[in-house]
Image 1 (tube, helix red, strand yellow):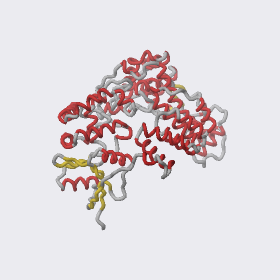
Image 2: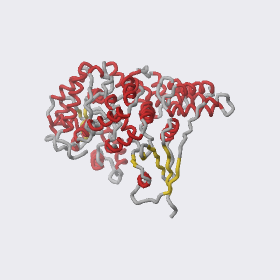
Image 3: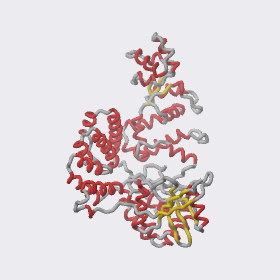
Image 4: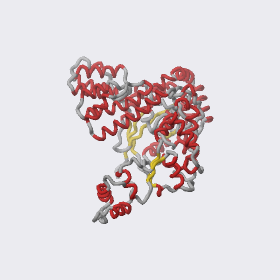
Length: 546
C-alpha cells in the first residue's frame, strides 16, 4: 500500500460506503443490516478502525498480539469492545486446525511440552502441526495458547453493503485508494435512484444466493464428489434474466465438470439452461459423442444463424465441416473463416534496448511516414471519446457507485440494446467528419484524465487524434466501432501495433519478430479488415545473419 495515503483514509472510505448504501437502499435492507450500520457508528474510533482493518485482511482468524497499527492507540481495548458489541469473537466455533495455522514453530513446541509430547524438537513445522493436532483432539486448545484469537463477525451484513455498493462481490476498496491518490479521478455521472439495479429485496437475495451457489459449486468440483454435484444440479434455481450472465457461468462450470465425469446426458441438459458461451459448443460436441450427429448439426446451424460471439461462429463452421465430411451437399453452403492477411518482409538491424515495434517505427519514419505505436489504445480511445456521454448515461443497473470506469453492463449483450437509440443518433451525427472531430476533441479536452474503460490517456495525443480523424475514413471508423460493440469483452484487443500516416492515407501494421505469429483475436481482426477494405498488413521482421 502506498505510504502517502491520507491518515484514516480506510475508515473514511468504509464509512462512505455504508452511508451511500443507507441513503440509496435503506428500504431494501433488513433490520439486522440497518442495525449493523447504526451499531458500527456507535463503536469507538479505535474499534471502528480495527474492524475495518480485519475485514480488509485475509482471515478469518487473527492473532491479537500481531494486530499492531500506528493509528490504533489501544488494540487490546479495541478487541474487547468488538467482542462485547458482537463485531468479533474469540474463534469459539473454529476447529483446532484453523487455530493451529496461526501458531509459530515456537508456539507448537510449547504446546508439545504442555501436553507431554516427546521427541518434537527435531520436527519440521508441518510435522509439528500434525503431532499437536493429534494430541489436542477433543481438548480445549484455545485455553493453552500464548495468544488471543480474534475473528471478525457480522460479515453477512457487510457482504450485503458491499454488493449494493459495488454491484458485485469481487471488488474491494482499491478504487477508493486510487481516488485518494488522484490516480483515477472518476467521471461525475448521474446515479439515478430510479435506475438502480437492485430495485427490490428479491433480486438482491437471488444475487446473494447465486454467489453462494458459485462458491459451493467450486468447493464440490474441487472435492471431486460426483454424486454431490449431481445432487446440486437437481436443486438449481430457475434462470432470472436480470442475473443471466451470473447464472450461466455457474451452469457452464458444473456442466463441464459433469462432462469430465462422463455424465453426458446430465451435462447436455444443464447446458440447455445456459444462454452464454460455450454452452452450445459443448452441447454440439456432447451430441456427437453420443452419436446424435443430426442433432449436433442442428445446434451448429442454430449458431451460424445467430452466433453469440465470433469464436462460437468459427467453431460451428469448422465442426460442421468435420461432421459433414467432404462430400456432403451442405459443405458448399458453409462460409469461410480463414483470415486473409497481407504480409511483407523487412530486414532490420537490431538495436540494444529497442523492441521490434520501435525498430519498425524508426524505419517507417525514415520512409517519411508519421508512425505511432498504438496497439489497443487508438480505436477504443476514439470510440470512448466519440461516445463518452452515451457510455456514462444513467441506464438501469449501469452505475452502482461513483468509482466506475464504465457501466456495469459494458460486457453484456444488453449494453447496446439499452442505448440503441442514442447510439444510432451518434452514428448518424459523426458520419460528418467535422462532427466526429468536434465530438472527440470536446471530450478529449473537457474529460482529460478521467477514468474511462476505453481511453488510455497516456497513449493519446492531440496530434495523433488529429491525424487519425483526418486520414481514417469515417466509414472505416464506423466499421471498427460496430465490431467492438458486437462483443466488447473480446474485441477491445487484437488491434495492430502501429498506425502509419502519410499525406491523407493511413496503414495499420502488426509487427512480428522472428518466430512470432498472429494470435486468434488478431486473425479475426485481420479477416474483418479484409472484408471491409481497411488497410492492414503484417510486417515480418528478420535480422541479418551474424
